[in-house]
Image 1 (cartoon, protein in one colour):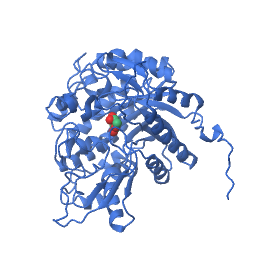
Image 2 (tube, rainbow, N blue to C red):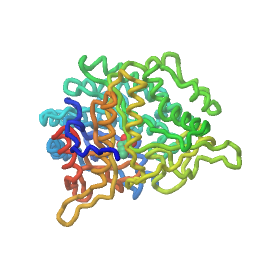
Image 3 (cartoon, protein in one colour):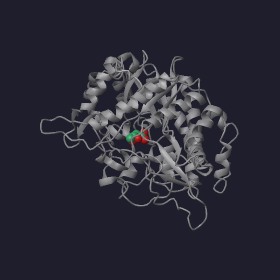
Image 4 (tube, rainbow, N blue to C red):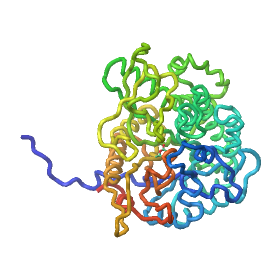
Length: 490
Ligand code: FCB
């Protein structure tokens, strides 16, 4: 029998490096509310959530978690957690209402007050410029499939950089452009709800361009020490079987889900195989000379959002077995399926007849997303190998469960604690394996407007009673505070 080492694990083994950034993350439309206050105009999410049948229960972000009016209380919650960092997004239509022209000072003042409150509490602000709330007027002018939107975004980045750059040192241009492009313009389950695969591919390119233009615009106005990043929801794609056909299915999804952003942004090129795979849809002539050089403007770190892995298998393109992209047994990405329960077009243009998504095994969260922390380890170590010089941050990770306050007012969420523990352990393993992970941002601080699911899904470590806006710290928040306090897992 092999001797088992029964010594208790020393805490140093699960300690994170000194200076590790411990945070939580939120997004403007999901928490702020105050949708029509102080000059804010509608974003595509205001319009989309008002359209019948788009968001579960007809929920909107009109009030959300009322963070716009409860900012001080929420910063106090962050301080109580002991986080070092807080990631939030700026609402574009709040600071530049129509997406053009001068800034609205009242809108900017809100973010100035938030940043000041964070700094006073000893918390580093991490600003995301675009977390999906495009000013509706820009969508009316063509939205992200339209090249001009990238230029508009750079102008908005200048406004935000000038207003906050003296106090905000970490900037993220875009949050999850994959979701914004393919769920917004191909499957239509997110705003603006269009179902045009070519528009989605154009949008993806314009996101890359907008990112690069914004990096340049920010460098022009920010102090030198500022850190500029972007956040991708990279897909941890696995084959159902290790067959050449299934590995080819992986390659296709990796191209359309990951390399479509990684290659332009880090290598100034488009994946050749992506161009081939989508040749029946587009010749990519919307990519102009110089665009890829712009997209690859150097950045200081990469943010990764991870929730669950993706498993794929090959299907033969023969008509009898071809899938239409409708009714896949698994949606293929965290937000893919239509929470209103109807079939939607595929968000994976050009792969519909070749790739089938297969449910990953294991326990599931209230989103029906599989719990699998190894996927996070796989992604981080892949990036260690592919982008060895780029520091990484996990800018979102977390889980929804059906939490409720018990009669004593406590919210017990042991499943969330288990999820977080497993994923933090995966981050720790990746660091031990030589990956440069600089921080971890838990999604999310507060229960909030979960996009097409409205308020039906709770991701917060702080419970929000949306009728009273009362905040209640969940067990997971206490657990996270203890992890931060000791600098690692027990
Ligand atoms: C991510 C989004 C975030 C939230 C989580 C659950 O894709 O960036 O706003 O919806 O999923």
